[in-house]
Image (cartoon, rainbow, N blue to C red; front, side):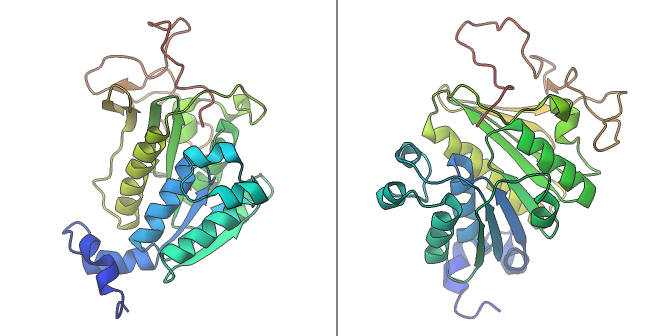
Length: 284
């Protein structure tokens, strides 16, 4: 199966955590990346170069000049032409690795098409910029038993977490009722491009572990600050409240704590520092 491809994947496949058997599993895997922005383009590029056999890219937006600072699969010509992000990204990924299948879908993920677009995936990666879409991904993945990796960034901060139905809390367990989510207009904030690379790289590292069915994957929420820099793993504490989405007695928004039992996951209405952003509102 890997005749002619051994050199391409040799550095990765010689890792004891992966091996050639693991590389074969990646070649047989199907991953959906929802969103081709800063997170999605970095994550899709890493997955393609890692040899994940089938990638589906879902995004309805078109490339603009403002995207070029942090969205690594696009160039000046894409922005001038206003090309659909999914099509431009797919073209770059095929050029980087012609041995894989890349399917662009120029559409927004909605309640009408989400089940069709996600149901045949082995894994879903979150490259979105709003909680309404994340709640939709969560609902379909819980229903279908598909693991997915949440990620979000804002300013110089970011979050990522593995969500495995039946094994971990789901997105609604931690971030609350999907009825409160919105995909409408929101105020744009600044963004350090480096944070998208860091968070997306952590996202893909965990995605590969999940695709290889490595049971030692992280079960915590990773918090990253690329400016300080800081990396913390926050552990979700149990709750007696049953989640409306996954039906598991797991976590609620009131109870997540870090491993040392320190800062609550959600900040209080009055932040400790006037300059501290609210990381748990609408992130990119």
